[in-house]
Length: 61
Image (cartoon, rainbow, N blue to C red):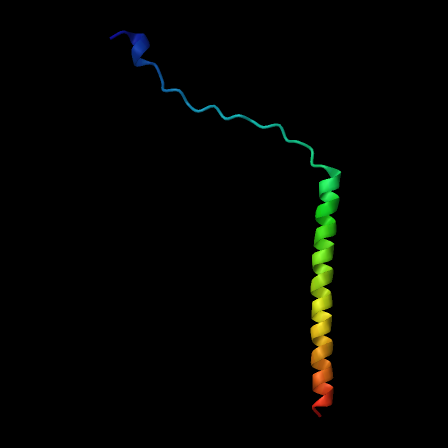
């Protein structure tokens, strides 16, 4: 055996570094609007449930 074959290391996987792409302002705006709508719908449903409970509670006395 020669010394060159003894010192050969196995190939390691080379990691590819991806370039960070800038996020689109349109996508960020749509995501924000989506969450605002979701929170608003949850608030409206909660308010309607509260009003229904309050009406039922007031009429039951």
